[in-house]
Length: 301
Image 1 (cartoon, rainbow, N blue to C red):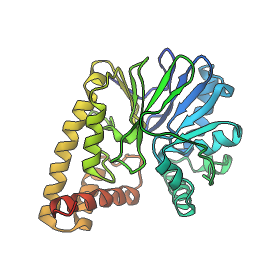
Image 2: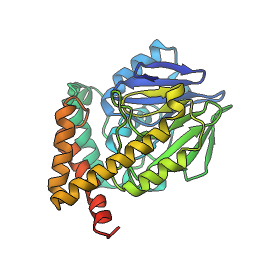
Image 3: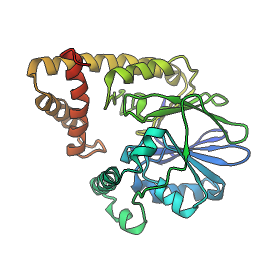
């Protein structure tokens, strides 16, 4: 089963945000943690939901960034400015990206563009949402365990969607937070998001496959629970392998990274015109994915 409805998932776990962009709140005995950072324009929704569900903002003592893409860190600057003592966790590579002035310009520009696409441009002027250097204060690595009182958050390095991707797993809840390193539950299918390296993406999914998962907590388009969640990582691997072969065939036929990327992007957006990313951003992602596929086909990877 799948859900995009904000609210309580189970004891200690909440889904907040909008259907296309969400974050998760873990409630431990000592404090609460936000996992992932969503899009910047969901801030008003988050504030309303915290009040509606009786969740105390002052208990949120930490945020775990799962990777440094603009659509997964959006609410972090807002929370950090509201509470300068909040701990911001990320991988070492993500911290490097989020300290780079050129990356920050791109992050802020993309955030505004997608807010405009979603009809939420007013949020950017209402709140101070721009990213700035120095916000990541804690580095986490593969195998680290964060304890928020009765709930553990285990860190797994899972590159492939990006070079900086990590996943989180809470064994007490059998809850997996793979961000875009896991298949995206879009409509009634599973989208593959092997943006930077398809080979690593598949290896990372296989690393996650042995985990017991009752709640597969995606960043885009909600979460998966019950029987579907328990087989979801395996199904994500199957979908990714099919998508990999399909895109390799497109590259073999066109022998052009740009032409192949345009074909993949155009076909997807024609079928899914309401997808959250702008056509320009989505085509750029397809081009990045196709570069690695071309290297694999041409024997250079």
